[in-house]
Image (tube, rainbow, N blue to C red):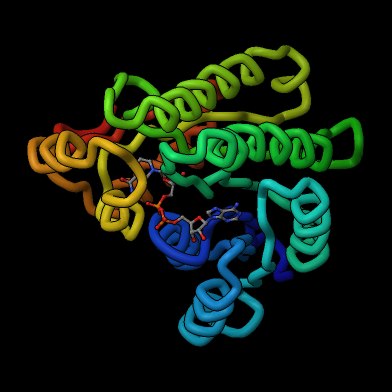
Length: 244
Ligand code: NAI
C-alpha cells in the first residue's frame, strides 16, 4: 500500500451502489476491498476496476456476510491486502418479504457482526487508528412502507443500532464514528428485481412511479459526504427532494 492512501472496505460491492462507491473511492485515491457473495460479479468488478485504476487498487473477496466465519476471514484478508481499514461500508442488503429470517440476517444481524469485528480492528487502544463505519439503511427505515414491512423493520433497526453505538463514550474515545445513509428508491438491479420479492408489488410500483428513481451517483455523493464529515451518529437522507 502506498503511504498516505486511505483504505476502504465495501460489503455488497460487486454491483449497484456498492460498486459505484468503490469506483468513486478509487477516483479519490483510496485503496478498496469489496466483499460480496456474487463471485462472478465481484471478480468482474475487480478486473475492470484494476484495469481502470491500476493493478492492486482494488481487491475482491467472496464472502456471504450472514456467515460469521466468512466475514471474519474476509475482513482479515482485507487488512492483509490494504494494511488497515479506515472506512468500512456495510452496504450489502436485500429485500425479500417471503423470507423474513434471511432479510433480518443480511440487513441487520450481519451488519451488527461486521461492526463488532471492525470496531475491534479500529480501536486505538488495540493498535488501530480509529475509523469510519457507514451503514446503508434506507428511507424505508424512516418511513413505514406497508408493502415491505420486514425490510422496513431491518432498516429502522439499523438506524437505531447505529445511533446507539455512536452514542457510546468508548467509541468516540477510540476515534471511531458510525453513521447511516438513507436513500430513496435508487436505480439499481435491487429495484428492477422487486416484483418477485413481495406480495403487493403494485403498491410498490405506484410508490416508485410517484417518487421517481434516484441516480446511484446521488447516493455515492451522500456516502462520500458522510465519510468526509465524520460526524458520529449522523443520519443522511437522500431523496428526490434533495439531501438532508
Ligand atoms: P443490489 O442488489 O444492486 O446490490 C446488492 C449487493 O449485495 C449485490 O452485489 C449482492 O450480491 C450483495 N449481497 C446480497 N446479499 C449478500 C450477502 N449475504 N453477502 C454478501 N453480499 C451480499 O442493491 P443496491 O441497490 O446496490 O443496494 C445496496 C444497499 O442499498 C442495500 O443495503 C439496500 O438495502 C440499500 N438501498 C437500496 C435502495 C434501492 O432502491 N436500490 C434504496 C435504499 C437503500
